[in-house]
Length: 249
Image (cartoon, rainbow, N blue to C red; front, side, top):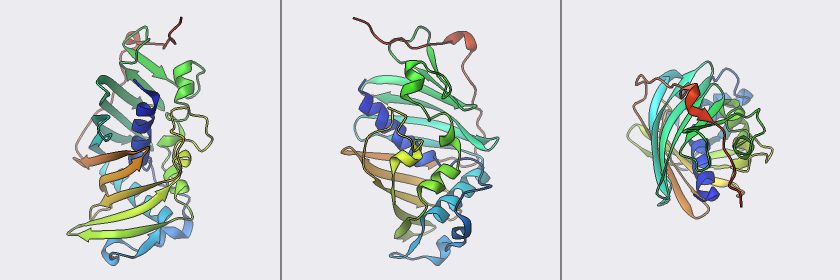
């Protein structure tokens, strides 16, 4: 499986879910007083950080949900997520370039099943570890679950209202992916790309229903549903978790 495909999947998840978690401090300050959806119309602009806070607050209030990802012909993924202890936990099944991966993110640690070269079914990706896989995905298990990262990434930006229909409002905003993926460039899983333009469609409660963007020539799309539906995220059994070994020879 090409690393660029995994990178696109990682970026799609970050763009769609970086706002999940506790919204006690978004870092947006007075910007949080921006216009509500009912007060905006096509062509208006709102503060980007305030928009991020509104969406974060709504997702936390819902508590859980489902998502389906489309990686523009490279693959698809689906799964569920819950907010717990001021962070986001999720489990997903991905099919990328004909290969199947399972991903569980819980307690600041990511577990992946289906990586070639793993000695056991699951591989543990710990942001504090120094094994090859953990280094490759450094940052994805830690601060990306901090909702302040999303608001921080949008500080100083303006989000444009590009459409309204019924109870939904679509916003367009430019995001620097490195700010969502740790901001330090330490994760080799993060695509090396310029800022991207993302479109978020929010319902009347400010919960996202759709996110789309273009990355490296691919259209990435996340559809959200089942807001508030009960879901349980569990880590794989310890005896099924091993380490990743790089191919030799």
